[in-house]
Length: 316
Image (cartoon, rainbow, N blue to C red):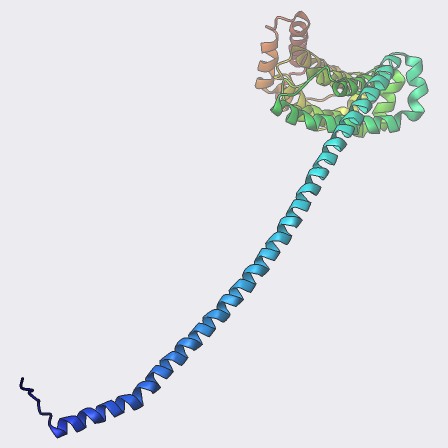
């Protein structure tokens, strides 16, 4: 067997040797730098992971605290809601008791006020009663619109009977001479309140209360002082005009009677252009002459006759 040996040039060998030496010298520096950088990055990543872990533990701790607080607040809310329900039930029970008591007491007052002697004995203490009555009626009337909206109106409720008894007592007081004189001189605010409340009440809503308030105003108007007092209110005639279209025949009837009381007073002066001479008012009254209720039909006919008496000719 013959061995063949390749010959390498000396220059190539020297060149290769140089390159190997250079690599031996350079490679450790490159590898060490990359390794150090990699280790540094690994250390940073480990630190960041530790920070994230600590933050996660902190957030978990806060979450647990918040959940505990939330649960505590929820339990307190449920307890407060239960207490609120209980308080509401207690208040309803107390309100029902007060309404029942007020209804019974005012029912007695209403019955007693039918006696003239009783009203005469009351005169010294009527002022405070009338103030409370006016405030109660106003509060009740302002709640009627909400009740009508929710269709929860119950005319047989104790609250309704309470205010009916209040209004009925005022009506009976005004039916007695000494009572109407007292109202005419010392209860102007009450009379104005009655007219304002009648204006506020929705047509067709709680006609019984309207009738009682109209009767009270009519009774007061029997007195010259009383008629002067209520006729000075600029809202009286517009109020009567509106109530003639209320829809309840008794409300219309007592509105006509109040209008008749105004018309029959000799001191009442109706000038040309007055709302009492407005054709539309007369048309409303004329429509009532066709009512199926005899008393309303008669009152409308009489009112038209009273209006015709007050027709005045223009002065040239």
